[in-house]
Image 1 (cartoon, rainbow, N blue to C red):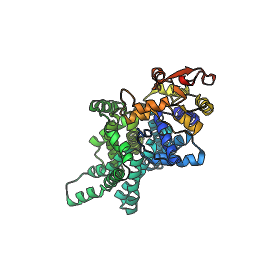
Image 2 (image 1 turned 90 degrees about the vertical axis):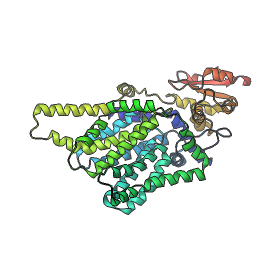
Image 3 (image 1 turned 180 degrees about the horizontal axis):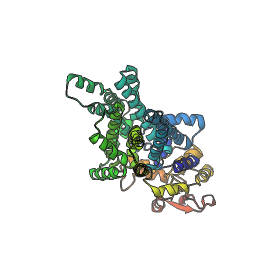
Length: 469
């Protein structure tokens, strides 16, 4: 919990974006703030984010209230994270104080396992929150028969899709939960299966409307991601590693196989969510450029499942026949299981405490912004266009988004070269894993490096067009 607090505070205190894809969300929000479409033709305008439009729209509202910076997107993500943690604990831990403490540790471990996505200005946490609330309402309809819960849940499934496309998988959870109910095939069972399909229909209609009403958005959200290669071998290896490192998955499997008691109806829903988000997360992670954040919905769902089972664990520890030695052994095993979930990257934990988490830039970000503000002529920072955006209000191309839109070719498209070559000054980022705009590239485009004391000791480097003298 402590290193999570340190990491969250570090990223909120940093004025720089957390990643290159945070930058894309900030640019999309700025485009909407300026009355421009979020999605545009990369050849004639600039490449756009491949995420949905919901978070850029909300972030543009925050820009109107608080000004353009990298902070509103981080705060929006953190607010969604805290909201989903509170809702999961309220529905699983109920009034058990010990379950709240253990559950909070498990849920904040999800943040650590994906390198502090709780403060990343991407749509993951907003999408997870919308999907969870949608499933919470639909499960209320399923268990209590409340029609209003069904009606409210359907637009939330669609909003989860519009935040981040893979969270559309939440629409499959009601169907899997119904199939998991068991029993013989009958008209009643088939009818109940039919009642579980409205979320899928709502999401399907939303995708069709998107294709008909906004082809450019459909291109970035559906067509382009579908072209990325999926490695089934990577999915297999990731799934095997995940099984070994995630005790919640093993506990869930044992529960399904060996438990013979009356299972809580809620458990059926949580197991369905774990299964759906595991399958879709492994698939998304196996795509080119995929990473552990694809499994964030699974991490949250598996934590919720474990929290729901904690009363049974506590009952075992309270058993009168449990000897002191067995009590200690059971407690140690439980502690090790929790530690296995919470400490997937111990090296990163140490770097967090040292305040050395890799960001898109460094602590000299404000100096780079100040420099870009006073330089004459056109100034670009293709690796972090938030610098000219905040300094001068200019919305410029991101080489990361341009590569995304072109499926990461060996040579960047010519129109990107022309865009960069048209600048008078270019700010380059030379930090760890961040130097995409190489010295050779800038030299070929006619730039020469400059020494500027304002950027001394930073990852930023200033280049000037040779023809400008």
